[in-house]
Image (cartoon, rainbow, N blue to C red; front, side, top):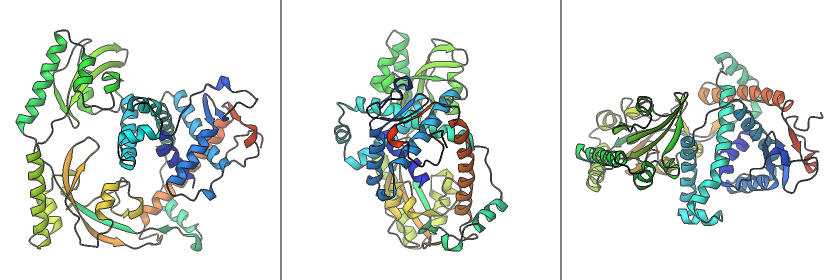
Length: 454
């Protein structure tokens, strides 16, 4: 349940109302709505209410949740955020905006349109919606990054995994849900040299306009396709450790103050950069991103090509694996015959825990050997391609078995060890951090010593 609550905080609290109040405003007296303070961060009654509402929306049995448990998890989140600031953990606006884009996209999928989302959260505009979510998203990402820092050196040996498994009572072994193994074939629409050159020519035209006196920021509003920086006029502050693609940083650090780069390509598209200021190790810059886009004809050709290949596979003229090796344009899976792997490198996906909802819809009703319909996919960088997926194996729901489910058991064992590290860190840092808990929660039986009196 603890993992569930942390997931709720990271993926749900970014869509609830956020109020920033400095710790100095908190006193020993009851302050309306404030139930807790950690360092400079405040927790409101409404934060607990909203987390509970969102938990219900996910289908979780909230009868098992107490307000004390929810407050305890919120307190942890604030402590991580507070320490992330103390440790000067770097988080760029691009990263915050990119994560927020994904969350808003998921909200739009559920609500039907961005206008419905804006209305649901009682905002006047899309811009106000983003402004409201920015701070809470940044706070949650900082908390996550702080936890990542704490556990990045934590490893686990095969013997520790075996010991962990053997300590689980046989009647308490976890149930592993239905799992599938699958393979994919991807065909991408062609983007011609002429289309790429048209983007380069446009960026050169914009560059010349700025050299001749036009505002770079105004050009960003007019032309840039980087959602994460449009509202700031393309502005970023980066150093050599900032998590931008190498090609972007190479160009940025080759410029002089006031210089505008020539168009260059990254995996995201084509850019130009204006380096405004060099401040020690930091660069203040603005950039414009334009992405070459396939024509309707190119998309249709890609679809037709994959449709025809699918028919050949169904007619047993070629195996799915051989077709993937010969024709698929997804380099990450092509050489393995299209085999899909999760983030841990495991080929088994637990069906009801798949994060890619479009992929889930493609495969959830397929039997072993069956092939999905040809589907148009838009990836996180807005690139489009067509994809078919074949189910290669299905593993029914079963009790966890050490040999059969080693990777899953390893994951749980490692998480347990990481949680021990985090738990000790929380205990140590509570002692040295300003904590305020409202009188209404003084009788909570927190897992950590938030009350500092036990």
